[in-house]
Image 1 (cartoon, rainbow, N blue to C red):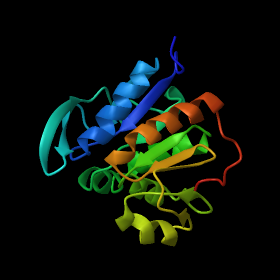
Image 2 (spheres, rainbow, N blue to C red):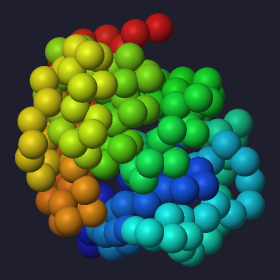
Image 3 (cartoon, rainbow, N blue to C red):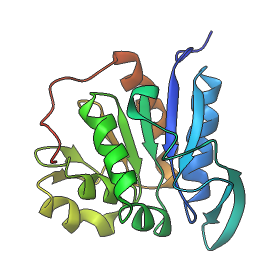
Image 4 (tube, helix red, strand yellow):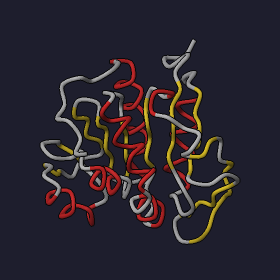
Length: 189
């Protein structure tokens, strides 16, 4: 029996996600018994960025039009520079992030993934980490930023980079076992 048996997790990504930041959480959360869906704006396959070049293709399980926040117990946002930059311009992606967060479910973002948290307006008053180049964006969004492997703030889990994936995945499992997180500032509309 896994720690996450019966749970369903969405990984929201599009072309240009950092390969390890999608595949490692997908594998670890699946090993813990969760059903993990790759959610993306369009059907088919999305191509990873693997450090310095294009990587593997990953099949999309559901499009954003087919996915709803109430279908999932948590949301994971992988980084890479391309992926979150594209998604933060997609109103449906931003809405999905905001809805999962507003429902009190764990939301986990790594590397450049917190750009989506900035765009969703959910960082004010939060304590987070990210890839260092996002520091100013995060502070300007009203959050406290620190340079740590992983930061959890009442169901909001953030991490810096692929080297931190072990801590990131462990914290996702821990926060999911805690259940919904109701004491957080409301997301911006």
